[in-house]
Amino acid sequence: MDEGEIEIDSIESIGFPDITPELARESGFLGVLDLLKVAKHGSGEKIYLVRFHYVSPPQHKVRRSEA
Image (cartoon, rainbow, N blue to C red; front, top):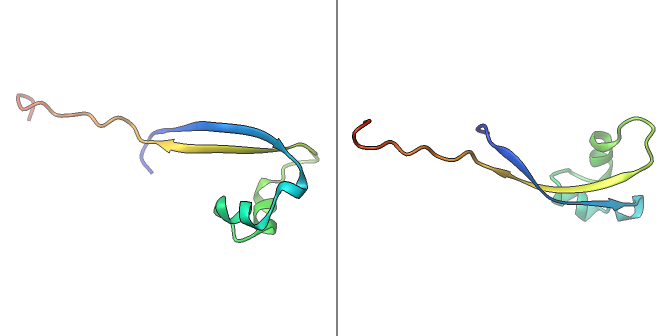
């Protein structure tokens, strides 16, 4: 991936029942266990679903006089 930015679409507090196989697959994981292996950090109990997308850096156009 080129240098760019991540733009946050939403942040939502969710519970364990909200972590479904469909959500795991939509997030790029094989299933819930794979998602939890990556997402679980420390002893925290709070769960947040963060939806985001990648924004490419602006393309610099070369003017004819510079080419």
